[in-house]
Image 1 (cartoon, rainbow, N blue to C red):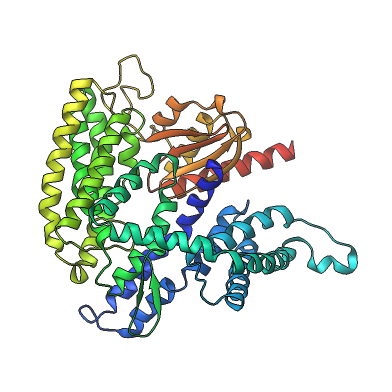
Image 2: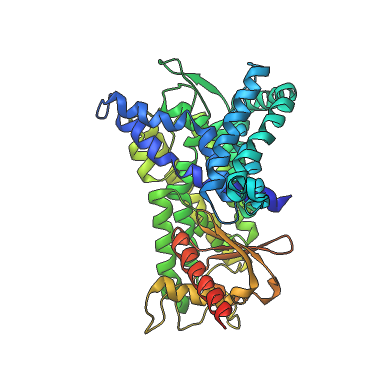
Length: 476
């Protein structure tokens, strides 16, 4: 079940990647920017059709080869599902859940039927062409069931949403802590999807109804932005301060080795709000620090709420989104003193705990540990290497036990997500020498390797090498 939920979380990242484009269009078209109404309307074209975008993206994520056939099936599936339910009970509004359900089912049906063969007179409908057909038939049956039964989960979801949205400091604080605690297992995307795209509703001047914290904030809902604002102090100041604390606590002869890495990942967090490279640098080495980090995130969320700060983002809480949405935020300057105080707390608490408890953060490993050689900086190319991605792909493949040990390979924002044949063959120390920021084992076969925001290029380079290896084996 955990693996299944992680696949959903991973698949959600592809449609979520469309949000920066939507947010940019909506924001730049507003009166206080360029005052181009059709640009804002174009951006809302994405935000008001998230269910079909999610269905397409998730179906591709679940399909074994990321096929466009699966994507088409996802789109057909959600259209059939929503219209069927509407005909039965017009009061039911599944929001993004219809897209998630349709995408998952379409992807699974694709994997089951993409190579199905029929007799000659029906062969035109075989293979991938059959997937949209079976998906639509499945969705007709499902729409009948959900059209009568979804009203009950909808009541539960609405009640949960109302509690979270009206629980004040407690609601935002609990969300902030859970948002960080779920990162190690990759389920924070699922939680975020509920808060960002489903909870709460707002009717725009055009009469369109948008749901979710991000959509409502970007479209002027005066009650939206409280569940997003508190992330800015953490991502822009708190975690970079944690990097500074880990650097200050590193052994003197290792500071030059880890300094470049800390500077790079701190700058990434400050500018873009991508924090996983930082979090995975201490998450497993020192779990206590990660618990502290989760609690401080909750505190930041509560502080922003108590100071009546509303701010939002289209991607994450970094400087780019802070600046872009500054004009439609409420009390955004108050995030700066919160950030300074939080940054000081992060530095002092992290440094004290690391030194006092001798926590093994990067740069403080025992001298006999070999996962980082004294002569080689993390992630730095070896001399004489040709293309860097190609070299890294070779190093990663070797550390993973070779192409023949990989059952499936995928990736999300910052992680490689792998299913291994024999996970015991994986050399974690070699992975870290190659540049991995962290390694996580899930279930019996699954493995996640934290690479950073360049993970897509590395994954494609690894796939290319795996394909070449497969071709060589067939030719032999």
